[in-house]
Image 1: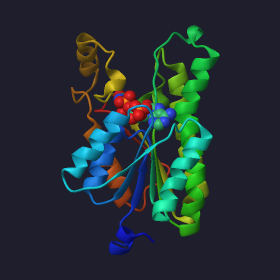
Image 2: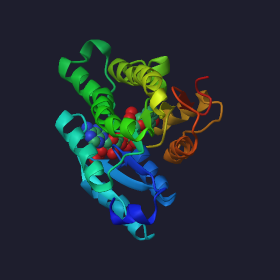
Image 3: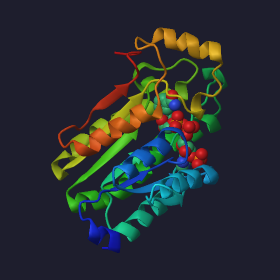
Image 4: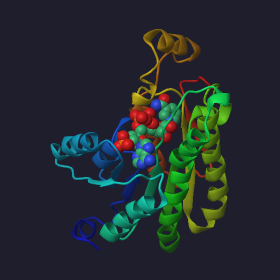
Length: 251
Ligand code: NAP
């Protein structure tokens, strides 16, 4: 075991894919502040990843940052191997990396479809398959898949996104059954609308209209999702669940 692991044997190792911006960045910050050993994965946004790293460094907290396009099997495997080489274990994998696209169904190209599956669904498969080998060996672990409200209800003009996010829900439930006996929990979080770059194309008026449909009357924040991740890490009896955090937009 490396030095900081020897100092704190209860320290959990948490990997967050897509940790450079939005929900993933907030999960990284909150888990690091809670004292977990966090590996921030990014792909294109190196500056954003470094900003998160520096923000935490100013608080006296160190995180690892690792570039990998997790939609590609080899790079996803590299990410998991980086964690194992450095810490010899993975306790929590948060499959958060994802992309969205709004398009009429008939205009979705083969490339759009494949890109959506690769980034939102296959990425989780590649990372999880590699990480789970170590978790099974250790007889403990937690996988958290960031799905979406559209994976439950379906979203108009987002058939490919909804399909990938629904796939993550099936993946979560099946894997929870298979890995429960190895003391590995698998859960999904299905956010409603969260204030991140992913929704920057909505106009002010569109956001106001959406808020009116939400019983709690507001758009969610990345902190709402990070708090749920923290709770799932602390818990030891929730598995196969899809926790929908959406202000009551869908019940
Ligand atoms: P965001 O602000 O657009 O951030 C997306 C993050 O994913 C970035 O850090 C990006 O990294 C990373 N990413 C995308 N493809 C990647 C890849 N192939 N490899 C590594 N990293 C990759 O989006 P967000 O709102 O935080 O979304 C995070 C997750 O929540 C996604 O899975 C999204 O589908 C889900 N979600 C979001 C909402 C919402 O309303 N915001 C609602 C439901 C579900 P780089 O920039 O470094 O490439």
